[in-house]
Length: 480
Image (cartoon, rainbow, N blue to C red; front, side, top):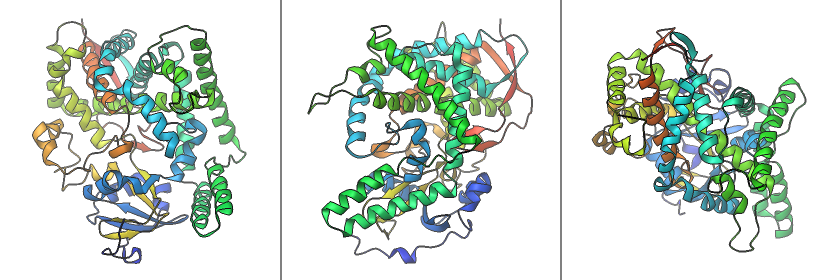
């Protein structure tokens, strides 16, 4: 892309609201709140391993993720931190591998395909609710995780996770907590910086040496696992997850279970060029990527939605009345009558986007917001901050589902709401989540009323994802 008419990188403004990147390690939520007040389109801060550029306007977000997406790839820090869990799965892979996997998996996530799962989503929510007793105190975040895991397991892989949800939840929490800590740790940041320097150096040496540098850079996607208790704990958690995936693969290869779910398609898929199939390691990476992504967004979004409804009685009443107006078990055909519950879910993802901040790295010189960003530049995007910006969401801390009335959504700039990212790397399961959210929420509202133990609710814990800190505790008052 031509950058002749743009300003040089050296003239980028410094974001004085954020003194340096250490605040994201030590006071991450405070830093995110400060970022929400930034009115520059783009700026930089001094990071722990070099300068980092933040894009802070919807227009700049759209440039990075959509119009100039070809000039960026996933941040190496993100890919390194998640590699032990997700490997080279769809969320972390790049290049030809990502294109092949995306092409393979896209058909099953099209709206006309996922509608068959609506009844299963309602069944999983009802099954969890049937285990509750009247006036029981629940951790809502734990319950929504159990439900979302069950939905992901049943619809994507035709497995029942209810009996092992606690073990799987603990293992995933350990793995995600480790990844979140590593993303802000100096050793991994320095490893990412070294990898970038290798790739930049490859542009200035003969082809033979360039290939060697690229090979070394590719090998460095795996993070250094420094010995210690946290490393031992995450390895034990990964063993739990790997054993479960291996069992799924073995059972499916023996011919048991559905033959029309994603796992079956992954195992039977053949490359169009050479006819090759995926290795079990590739299948493992995709299964865990989709299992994590397939439940984390919905689980946390539902937990935050229930908390905010309890804090806002008018919202609660409208959502409950809409749910109770339905007849029998909720099906796909009921979705047009769950528009308010959908808006509640979307508003919870606005205030509490599960992936609250993520990065991209420029793979070529690129112009963003009138500035030239050199190849190798790390760019950070923060849904949490932009989705709380008063220019796009007046009184941004207020929970107001009507922000997502169709006419108001259409009036906002592209890039002002991106909990599922945007452009070519948009979350493959966004339609799945936006169907599951209102169905599960309405099912739970038909079964019980919820009353927060702490009326002020729970603050977010910005780790690998934006989970409720310590859970969300409420009493469930069952209906007859």
